[in-house]
Structure formats: C-alpha cells, structure tokens
Image (cartoon, rainbow, N blue to C red; front, side, top):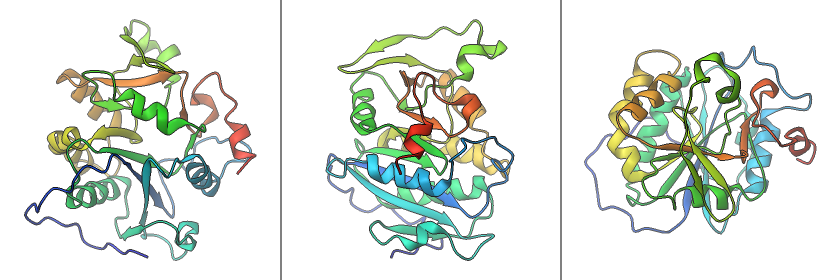
Amino acid sequence: MWRYIFPFRGELSEIKPLSNKVEVFSRHCFFSTISAHKKRFPTFSREACAQNLIQTLDHSQANLTFLLDTARGKEHFIQRQTSYPLITFDAGTEAKAFLALLDHVESLHLHPDTIVYFVEDDYLHRPGWLDILIEGFSIPGVDYVTLYDHKDKYYFPQYQDLKSKIFLTETSHWRTVPSTTQTFAARMKTLKKDLPIHRRFSEQSDITADHEKFSLLTRLGSTIISPIPGWSTHAEPEFASPRFNWESLLQTT
C-alpha cells in the first residue's frame, strides 16, 4: 500500500514516456459536508460507486489510483482493497483534498499527452465509459471532458438561452457545456497550464467553487464537452444524467 502525507513541490525531473494509458484518480473521504444533505438512489453507497468504477474500468487502457483524506475517521472501506495504489493525506476539507490531489498528480511528471481523469466518490459509470472518454479527446480543440450529461443544463432558468456546439464521434454525440463538476478529465498539458486556476478556486474556501472555476476557464477559451446521453452520473436522482437507469448499476455491484 502506498502512503502519501505531504504534497511534493520539488524541481521537475524527467517526464515519463507516454504509456497511452488513462490515469484515473478516485478521491475519497470519511465524511463529506458537501453531500451529506443530498438525496440519493435507494441502494446508493459510496462503496457501491467504487465497485462500479472498478468493474467498468478497462484495465488494459487505464491505471487506477485511490486517494483518501484520513481526517475525521479511522477506517474506510477503500483501505481494505490491496489491488490499487492508495494515497493518503490529512486534508479535512474538500478543497484541501483536491489541492493534495493536484500536488500528487503534478509530482508524477506524466507525459503531456496523458489523459488524467479525476473521479469523486459518488459517481456511477456505464460499462464502456473509458472508450467514450478517449473518443472525446479525439475531437480537435477539446480541453476538458466530462462523462456527466448535466441535467440542470436542460431546465435551470439560467440556461434557457444556452447554446452548445454539437460534435459527433464514432459512438457518441457531444455538446459543449459552460462548466462541470470536480469529476472531469484533461490531458496533462492542459491541467498543467491551468493549474493556477484550479488551485485558486480551491484555496479560497473549504469547498471548491467548481462551477465558477470552469465558467472562468470557458471564458478564457477552454472547450468543455459532455456526451449525449451521459456515460456517468452524479449519484443524485434529481440531477442524474437523463435517459439511463442508473439504479440498475447499483443493483449489480
């Protein structure tokens, strides 16, 4: 088991060669003040979400690392697994935990073209999602990819005049979106370029202002896309990606 306590901030060493594998980082904590009040699917659990991620991951195309904020608890289900690296740190807030994640990923010196995918602990994924994620990055000019088809973009009043560009890849339609959540993917070169912005919005509060952060990145010229329909969802029924029975995934884990 790997253990990570203090963020690394040394000089950059030699960049690792491109392995063509997606690097997936799944972030966990003992208790989340952000989501404690949210309504969930009847059979929801964070352990089921983690099992869903493992079961739907194509390990020939991706590496998986778990990260755990050890503040506020002593035992977490993710500590029982031994198949994947586990990075631990004592953060105490969502924002500090995300900053620790950024520091860890930066310390790996990944190839600039490596796709990194950050996953929060309350997301579900449809089988085959990794192929769709990779397809998203085949679209020229794309900076960020989310697999979450944000339901609020369809009916919240502030989005009634929202206009999106539509793209077509081999197996999916895509639309541009002005923002997304803390579950997103980018190439390492994009993440590195935008690190000051990602850090800024996690240094201002205990909770990262993800909507404001990505809205700023969009205004600065970044292109964020999500598939139609979605291939992942935040496990919150009211805002779940439309046109898929997400509860069925919880029942098969």
